[in-house]
Length: 339
Ligand SMILES: Nc1ncnc2c1ncn2[C@@H]1O[C@H](COP(=O)(O)OP(=O)(O)O)[C@@H](O)[C@H]1O
Ligand SMILES: [Mg+2]
Image 1 (cartoon, protein in one colour):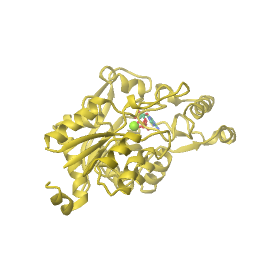
Image 2 (cartoon, rainbow, N blue to C red):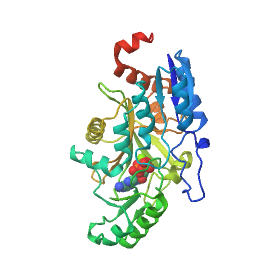
Image 3 (tube, rainbow, N blue to C red):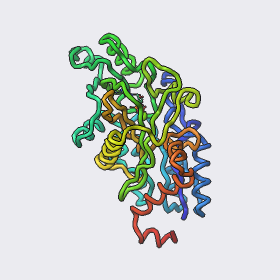
Image 4 (cartoon, rainbow, N blue to C red):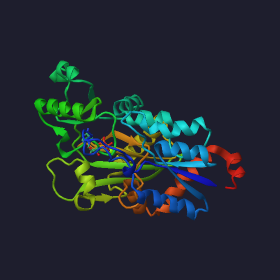
């Protein structure tokens, strides 16, 4: 089968002087693309590196692509940027891996995602959204949670998240909101800070979805307050340890599993995803966000790392994602492509 790879490389994106320092954080490197391509080739597929943006558009129209493996984050800072590539593929009736435009749009919008999972009975930290300086001014202190965690509403990859994103005082919340409104040009999410353990959950497949692993992220040194922030993610080998399977009590593990699978279903995730939680000091999992396009860097991606710890190879991970996607398109598609 001829598989196109859709991706956005850091090197392909132009930034200006007024862009935040982490503007390219979500985009991929050549190593990731080569690693995925190598797996697909080992499965006897022809791989065409389509890239993203205009290059993707001309490639997808010119080359006869049977299926697209999509890891493209999309262009611009639109909140539906992750839906760009799947929308084009649906327009052209070309099958692809991963979630559809609607899910990718919803999940990049953290407040909307929180509302949906909360309506499905999942715990998520209480929150308010502040969209402008005027709204900030009008927001009574009593609606601001303390301690708070403050982040851009439509970002991922730790963009706008630092060790300083936690605030203990109203004045600190207000000044952090002000800074993020200016720097990221989008609404700001102010959440109650959840003090307990950091957990991420990997899921692959559809019917039924399978939990690949539940990974506990443990700081290597004592932090006053630990945040799995950009600083930590960039220096992960030194700063954190990954425990997978996480050694929590069986009742906590069950709560995490139930919440993850419920959120996956509620949000319409497909083929694979990674979900982040914090445990409260009483051991209740609080949903933070879902990543329907989780990083697949074979060395540093949380999903690949947790897969290795659960005895999977990188090949098995990528193959499982492709198989989950192909199964959705059914036997007719598969037999017409000799799969
Ligand atoms: N409400 C919160 N309470 C405590 N820590 C939080 C909260 N929200 C986010 N964090 C910390 O910030 C990290 C990144 O936040 P997250 O919402 O997962 O954004 P990203 O899309 O950047 O990964 C989390 O893994 C966690 O360590
Ligand atoms: Mg996260």
